[in-house]
Image (cartoon, rainbow, N blue to C red; front, top):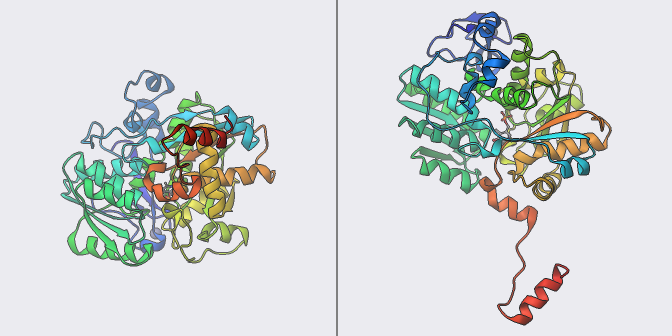
Length: 414
Ligand SMILES: *Cc1c(COP(=O)(O)O)cnc(C)c1O
Ligand SMILES: [Zn+2]
């Protein structure tokens, strides 16, 4: 990896060689000693420019190889991840109260969420290291993306999910041939169990935050947003937050582009959490350290009581002069209908939490009408149909007769 200088602990600043098996800073430990990938921006500039991107026909995250911590032309999983559409839905923008609103629909990724960006980099790293098993714990989407991307190259997976994970997500895992452990406990307990299994067996570790390459995969969403906006930078980016890797990755993407001279300003970052599980947003609002919270929300993908990447997530918001906001489950369900009806985009609850938060931030005057906003939809609505039905209701029942039809049409105003 000629483009990577070293890995650096975000707590103590100690640097490490990016060797196989290196995940965290051993001085600071797994809670604090999260590593950042530090690049040689001069080297990146020698390999990539706006022109090379314009001429690159690879419409997947691998078009950004010079910005990724992988071996040049090294082995890669086979699914097509990334280059998701960046919509500019006018009706939606008007309803939200913005002049320039972009929606990045990452639910169209191969396994249906933004997690594919992280997982395909993790699988590429596992392939570089000749690992034969990849293990992860997840609320669902990290798991299914890990299993799917690993399956694309025949690598085995052992996946720990909390018992509450929606059936749609668990069924994906089973279809991808994963060994699934449905842990009858919280996400925190699920995470601990996977960490023990990894340590006992030496498996490749695809756990949030612990693996420094995951954020690097996730940052490609921002490289895409910039390129799709013709290298303009939005004033705000809005992301829902659980562990904090997605928002940290999104921020890192802009930072790397900035440091490599592709853009000349940084966006402000808005982090959105569910009111029933918002350890980071509450800490920011109350100006104190974060502490563990219960996991009380329908948005299972962001129901994370002990965020694994709290430091990087908090840093992304504070360094960018951004904000945190919380949204209730009702506001999330409303945002699902709102986005479906006004933009044709169907997100799962955590996927629409960002939009729910954006509506509040505009209503409260934090985000101004003429500011440009890119809001991410991080997961597909088909992942969790039970909550979609909760949001949108059951269909009207119609008797198969002329009378039945007449009655039904009258109901909808015809
Ligand atoms: C994982 C996930 C998030 C949040 O990402 P974190 O890195 O956990 O903060 C948001 N939405 C969806 C759909 C996810 O799967
Ligand atoms: Zn350290």
